Length: 223
Image 1: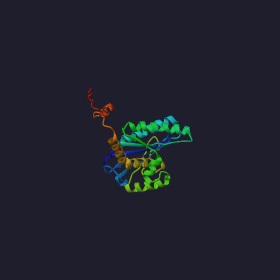
Image 2: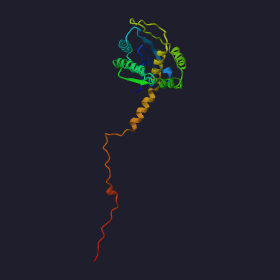
Image 3: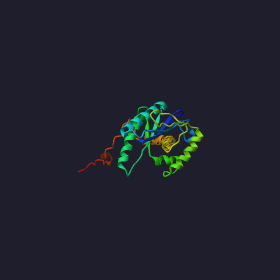
Image 4: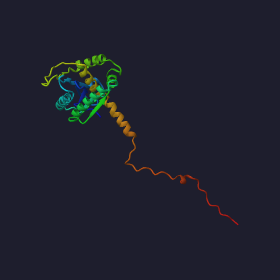
């Protein structure tokens, strides 16, 4: 989908205890460079440790919904995490992601997922880049865009400026990577659509194979 100036993209790094978020604004239609974006919000939601797991899910859902309601993002990007060795952790992370997706869909009808290696490769050129390499690049981007970040750590949701964490960094990487690839995704869909059959046109009738056989003239017989 083509991004237009003034649109907002919200990146989400899901977690049942800490959820990172970051929003960026598109400063130029059809953006192609990091200079075409500006960071607007950056921080984490951190649920109190004495909360039960299911209560934390409700807490994260409500906090993200309140943030999205304030930002009104046109697109949301959430990390597509994969946990191989710990099935129980994977189940909990999946439940947390579901709660956050439901919150985002209450505000934005366009939500996408992206793996962390994909975001890293888009940002740094290496899918196996370390968190420090990604963070160093994003720090340069943040200094350039002169962002203001917010951090929510308790029920009062007091905001603290200039807070930076790995969770917020991952969320920012997701939003920025998806924004940079938006024009590629649009071109891919357009190319695929051009090769799809046009069902509005009448299908060509198949030629009867018998009509392709050579015809011989009847020969008169003389007695």
